[in-house]
Each structure stands twice: as C-alpha cells, then as structure tokens.
Image (cartoon, rainbow, N blue to C red):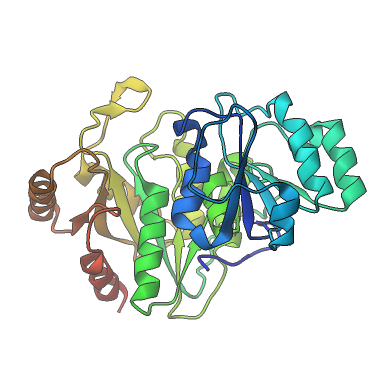
Length: 346
C-alpha cells in the first residue's frame, strides 16, 4: 500500500479497480490506465473497453458485473482525451457500472455529477461518483507551523518531466529498504494510483499551502512522507501551485527533477530552462520560509532515449558539478539517494 488517507479533505477511493478505456485507440491517451497498471498492479483486476476500442492493458477483460463478483469496488476512467470531457458514448457504460455496484472514479474536467443520467443511476444504486480533480471541501489556510515526521518533496525545472514517477520510485525504494515511507498524491493520476490524496491544481490558490499541510500531517519522527510535486517555480503559468506546495509541505529534503534535453519551458519557447544550480538555490531560498533546514539530496533525470553509456556519463557530470547523486528513477539504483536522506536528516 503506497498511501493512506491523511485528512478528511482528501479524496479516498475504494479499491480494487476495473480500468475503463472506452473506445480509445491511442495508448498515449490512456496513460492514466497504463500508470495504474504499472504502479499499482495489485489493485487492477481487469479492463473494460467499448466496441472499437483497441487499447490493451494486458489485463483480463471483464464486464462490471463480472468485476464486481471478483471484489472490484470502483470503475476507474483510465483515459484522458483532449479537453477532459466525458464522451457521451460512455454514459450508458458508466450507468451499467453503477447498476452493477461499482463506484465511478474520474480525473476528467467534466464533473460526473453534471450528467443527470449518472446522478440518477448513482442514487438508484447507492454508489459513489468521485471526481478526483474537484475537492468536496475547502482546505484550511496554511499556518507554517512545523510538524513532526520527515518530508521529501519532488520539485522540477519544468512541468511534465517525472516528479510523480520519481516520488513513486523513491517511496518504493524506501519501503524496500525498511524505511517508513508513504507516497502523498497531489494530482489526479497519483490519487488513482495511491487511493487517496488532494489534487492541488484544483485548489483555490489561497488554500494550496493548507492543503499540503493537511495532506502530510504530523507523524512519528522516523516516518517519511514522499510528496508528489506539481508544476514548477520557473513556469510562467504554474509557479503559484508549486510555491504553495513547497511552503505547505515544509520538506526536509527536495529532489530536483529535470529533462536534460529540454532547452525551454514546455509550451513556452520564450522562457529558457533554468540551470540546475539556479533551480536548487531558488527552491532552497523559498523553502526556508517554512523549513530553515531544507536541503537538496539528488537530481532525478529523465533519460529516456539515452544509451546506457550516455546516461552514466551524464550522471557522472552532474555529480561532479553539483556534488549530488544524479539518477533516473526508472533506470537507476536509488541507494545513493537514500544514503543522502540518512546523511541529511540523521
């Protein structure tokens, strides 16, 4: 189990899942379903697709009724089409799932409760419809008061370069090493993987720090919360959510995530990527507002497409330049980073 519900304001999902891919034909549009399959395989009992759908997760194909008979609790919408709208062709299928006794879990922008037919089916069946992007309660205002326990936050030089995967990989490595660690999800896919969390990009800006505090409450001194980062302090659109998450998380340590071949902020070519030294310094400067002892313990690099010798040469150069372990969370031994955690906090 990667996570547990830390707060009454966090979304909590009933597991296990039946993964729904609708009539999707593009694997890239089904990245949520593939992410669940890869990171939470024990929670994924089967898949269900509509006629014409070709995405294959390699799981047993089950109807909602068959899945429910095997103990499945929730149908999870595992596709994310452009615009985040619920396809009208899905509605009949979602009603079938509700009538079979499954909750519906969605990370779409369209709210499930905006569709009257689904509302009626949920009321009839007594099942829940969960929109993980839309909080049902307002988080508290952050107070900045230090909490017991230890915290690691993944941060980035840009968006979409591996903060979630780095947090998941580090949590798994820490647990395997006998370290008490819990993954704390801050985005819709992370929530679906872990079963609990808060989608901070859907929180009103004044409450982001408070949401982060609620997500990672006081814990035992030897327990680590590994908090999934969002956005980037260097992004012209999304820096606000990153700063609120940094202040509310009060991380003892950060891991900086970076795409070494990216020259400009994704989608904003007029904005150059920061240097790694600048990114570390800015995060530590701003992070000291709520944790004076914050440190950076590693650089997570997205090296997809690199040959093995190119990857190792890049890691060595980063180590020489920054005196920090560099690694790819999907390719590397994470032991050097875990040793840094021990050295940093004791």
